[in-house]
Length: 212
Picture 1 (cartoon, rainbow, N blue to C red):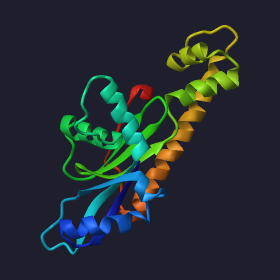
Picture 2 (picture 1 turned 90 degrees about the vertical axis):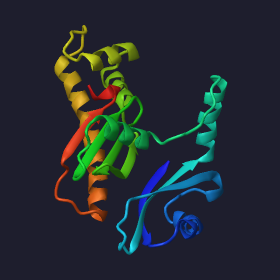
Picture 3 (picture 1 turned 120 degrees about the vertical axis):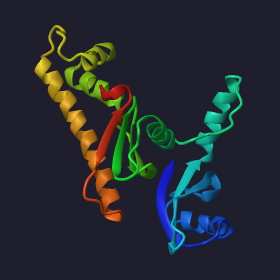
Picture 4 (picture 1 turned 180 degrees about the horizontal axis):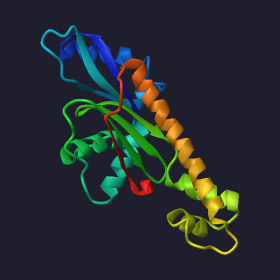
């Protein structure tokens, strides 16, 4: 999915619906017939000359795959949300989100890391990084030439003794993967600052099974 914050001339919802496909063509690298487009209009002042919104584009095939999975489980899908939006909503509702300032959310999953930047309680930027817990496991398996189960064990407790494996080497491999993820997170922050200059990130929240 693609999420892009847009600033457009002030317009009504009807005008916005007509303009959205034209705007989306600039940012969506797929045929618009193959994606579902929607948007979230952000809060704006009465005298504000622009309309601020989050454009969201998700491929139809991925939506259909998740819908089919839910139907096969015997349930009926009512609402489908992006992982980044669900993460931001969970944070705002449960973690006493400050009304101002910038918060960086980093959710480390098995196959990817989701990065969100919030302005107060409003999602401003999100990005999926194709590095996660499995990246650590694969790096250990490859560099140490061990079985996947052993690599997983080393990842979970690198201080434990595994015959023939140097704990210092394990830590070096894990640190290298962490450095790669940090570089990608920084790129997300730099991208955000290029469009929305801010002095500092006021809060960083890390979650997910691979963040331990």
